[in-house]
Length: 215
Image (cartoon, rainbow, N blue to C red; front, side, top):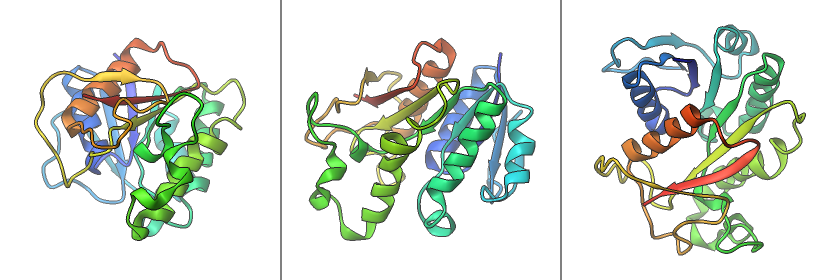
């Protein structure tokens, strides 16, 4: 079993990944600004600020695998990409793979087509900055990291989030950077996204890759 640190481990996606990884027997540390109301048994919770490099370094240094489950909103709205660049440097320095929770808009509707983020008419204006920042992590920042860093950016289907938690079905489909549901109407529950996400970690057969999970 692996020692997995989930940065943003009490958010919607992060908490689902923490629960799935812990259920499989992994040694999980969840790092976040707040502690959960209902902690997952056998998970170590560390309270801290993702903008604090020393705090990040302290949790990453004891890990085998790093998971980033941060959102480009609130306190991280202006520093989201820099935080992920820092996480990537720490992971690369420790020789650790990095798995990142992505967004639907960074996907493409068809092979070779522009990504959804190129036309933001599909999303309300209040989400545009968050969408652009999240997509830039996989279109610009991760590809610019040294080849020694193994990263996997995992986008969910279009309807994914606390507004549509869904049920655990115990199934999912895995695609590359072309959306499995190109019209954006598809969905995946938090539990099944976590199922696919931890399967990617356990199998370890994707390298410097952008993938997506959906039904």
